[in-house]
View 1 (cartoon, rainbow, N blue to C red):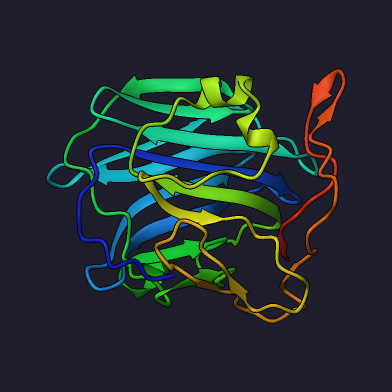
View 2: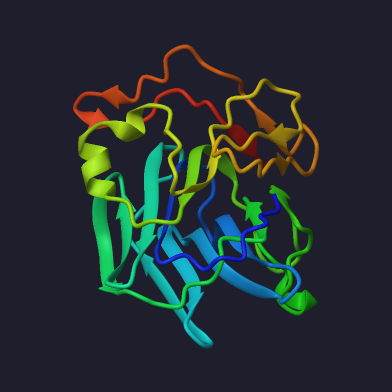
Length: 239
């Protein structure tokens, strides 16, 4: 997807439900950057079974954090928030890491890639403007299932939203939502509809054998006592 936003946000939140089938290596869930400058602005990824955040800020500063544990073949909710006060990582509503905040954040775009990242062998540029499941030679794609991906220009209260049950339903869009993929299309669809109102439609790359929807399921059954988890997916599968 391509974003026309050149505005630097004062804060950023990225949230998603993931169900990975492979966690070895570094596997981007979402990468946001600029194909014209070659800069990777933000990336939320799996890294050896942990949650990873990589972002630029200020004048040439970079922060890379890896923390927590994300099991395979199980639904987990992951989120990161960046503000001037704190940088935080969350898994299933629980904070797993906190460090200093950052100013001078870069724009949420213009290039947005889900399930893949830029090619470091090509001068740190995105291999295409934006889409789902982009393959490159140096970095493994995210493999597994994905649902309810939201990017916002505000530091959301992840723990509070988790406790109130917001993540057990379809996420809403508000004035701070930059991107929102519900990923509820039927199998065979080749685009991902942006429900934020910003019209950042994504293209599914690789054909049905590599990435596809399961369609809308009537009951996601997010809670299974005593463990909270998604039981049924409403997502594209990236393989």
